Image 1 (cartoon, rainbow, N blue to C red):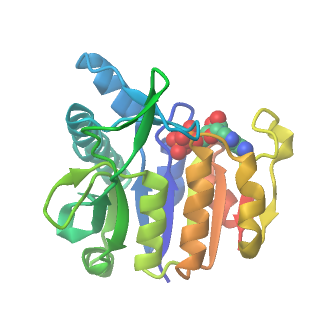
Image 2 (tube, rainbow, N blue to C red):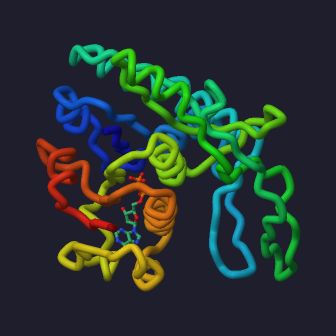
Length: 264
Ligand code: ADP
C-alpha cells in the first residue's frame, strides 16, 4: 500500500531525521516544500518577495515570473537534487520530479485574484500561482514499481505548458489521492494543529473528517493550507492525514503512530 510523506521547507524543519527514518520503509512518495530555500535564493538574486492583500484581508505572496523562476531553481533544481543525493548517501535510490514531469501535476492558473492597493481593489497582474486540477499517478507507480522513491515538489504546469507555482501541501494531497494513499503525513516545524498558534500545549489530537470546518478557524497563515490539504485528501479517499513534527529522531514513525493532529 502506498503512502505519502510531505516535509515542510520553512525554517525549523529538519530533513535529516526524516530521511533517516525513511531508509527502511517502502512504497512511499516524498513531497517537499521549500519556502526557506526559495527565500534564500531570492535574496541572493536580489529578488525580494512581493505580497498582496486580498479584500478579505488574506496576505499572499505574488508569484511573479521572476519568483516562479526562483522556485524552479531552488526546488526542482537545488533542493530536490540535494534530497536525492542525501537519499543516495543512505543507500536509497530516489528520483526528483517537479509537477511538470510526466504530466504529474496538472494545474489551472488562478484567475481573478484581487488586491487592495491604496484603498482601491485591483486585479493582481502577472501572478503565476495555480490550483491543481488533476494528478497523474502513472510515472509515480512506474517508479515505485521499479523500486525508486519519487521526490516531488512544485511547480506544476497548465495544459498549455505554462509553469505555475502551487502549494506543496495541497500538491501532496493531490499526489496522495492519485496514488490511492492509505496515509498522508504532513511533517512541519510544529507538532500539530494548535487551538492557540502560540501555545505548544494546545495541539488538537484528533479531528473527525466531517468536522474539519470547525478547526479551520484555528489555523492561521500557512497552517491553513495544511488543514485544507487534509480535507482534500480525505475527500479524495485517503484513509488518514497526520500533521506532525519533523523534530525528534523518528519523525515518520511518530507521525504514523498518530503523534500529531490526526484527521480521519
Ligand atoms: P512548512 O514549511 O513546514 O509547510 P509553515 O511554516 O509554512 O511550515 O507552516 C507551519 C506554521 O504555521 C507554524 O510554524 C506556525 O507558525 C503556523 N501556524 C499558524 N496557525 C497555527 C496553528 N493553529 N497551529 C500550529 N501552527 C500554526
